[in-house]
Image 1 (tube, rainbow, N blue to C red):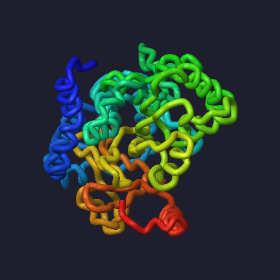
Image 2 (cartoon, rainbow, N blue to C red):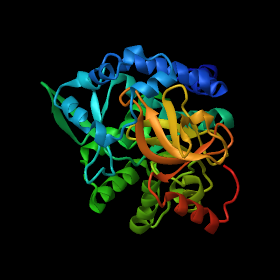
Image 3 (cartoon, rainbow, N blue to C red):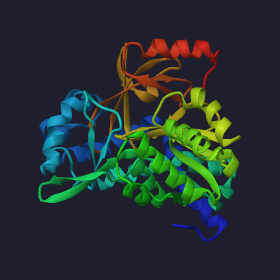
Image 4 (tube, rainbow, N blue to C red):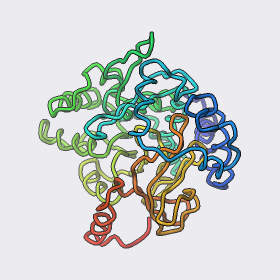
Length: 382
């Protein structure tokens, strides 16, 4: 997918992010178009037929027909899908399953992936591509992306007569983003997969040593992945090799996700270890990649062209793009896999189209968020 001329390169990159830009110019129209596409898919599934997806024409119809659900509500359907009854929830055969690093009542969540879903996951590359275009930082392509992610393949499950792979979403994102964008990742995801799916300190030390060995003589210009892992890798390098990433490479950009507060809590430590890098936050989860930082404002901007976004607020359920600055609520997403899925994240709106995820949907999250801002004297907007 490497372009042959600077003009081709710019055109390819622009095409990657233009649908995002277009959707932001008219979020309402973009969301209605997304809903129509999603409903067409849901109407082919058992779950969609049960909720009369074929009769849904408007947002109000959708809300009346489909309830807001959590993972626990869909768990029986997930089990049937994994057992081979793919049509109960999916309109395409699954090509794999993503599992969470966290737990739901002590268990990892298993989220099926389909070809349509995988194409949407490549949107994780928008943070990187958008930065390159805005900063004209094409020199980043001369280097590699330092890959510090979990394995994309941990094992297999039997789905009917088929064996289907499952792995961690962060590794899956890297594998598919690398194929869909002009950036090379090292170690290659297959090398990480070969080390296994363990989560112990020793398992991570093996991955970190692999990353150091494969990249120490490379021109690393980009780091993408999970923010706490990037911090842990920097500490590992100092502990084992007495160097920091900034001593080895001139990293230009870090695109990081998985935790709230990347721009407010993690950036100082990251810059101490990686140098004077630009950081771009990605808002995503095992269920999908929902938004990414667009500019220097410390907030993410939704992928209105890919997912349908609602929010449960104290005044009721509204569209994400209808939120007012300062308003807060619990995110509800609709994806090709999951209709009206309460993901469990609390968000706060700033001036459109900027948002922050501040943590999990728990009673003390808002209190911790505002106490943290007070302690950091962070009283401004994004």
